[in-house]
Length: 240
Image 1 (cartoon, helix red, strand yellow):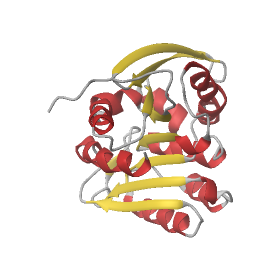
Image 2: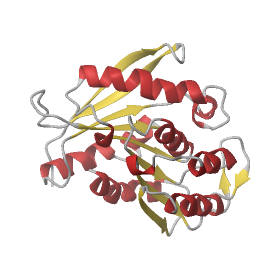
Image 3: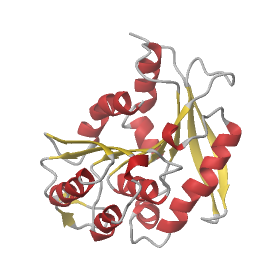
Image 4: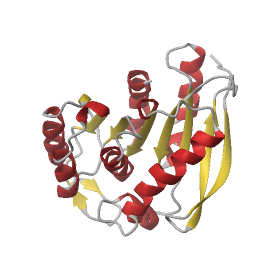
């Protein structure tokens, strides 16, 4: 069945934190009106979520069927894997600047330009792999700004585990977390092979001990969009 299609437009945004212009992909629903208020989902790996995740088409369907609340999606694409690593990896040279860009620059801009609710509870971050990692770290640093985080197979290291362990505002955060049970030998962007499953299980244990609203599941699969794309059906419905 064909559903009324939303629009995706490209915007250029200048970030002072990062010292560069970024291309943003902004999805507005088919029945978009400035008279309504909208929840906001910010996607790292923005182009991947629209092209490989087909998140726009899924949102068209869910909004038409009234399965989710009104939603605007903003994708933040990356230029190349080196830049992605610099911004998304917990030890990347621009990691903190990127997180500040999300909270201090992008959110105020979107709240000014779009009819959002302007509340943390109605703002979400999503990412896969390192994109999930930076989404989680941003949510931990700015839980009043980002009340929901969707994690698809995050990269987890000691920085991430320690940040969650030391996080004390669990009641502000809602987390959706999936990892594949075959993600024991994942080829990372720097060419190394890493076990993603074991550290994700450690992460899950720590989160479970916090007052965080939390969903966790291990899917039968590996570190690819073959599994993340269909998982979005449940993720969006659960958080919106």
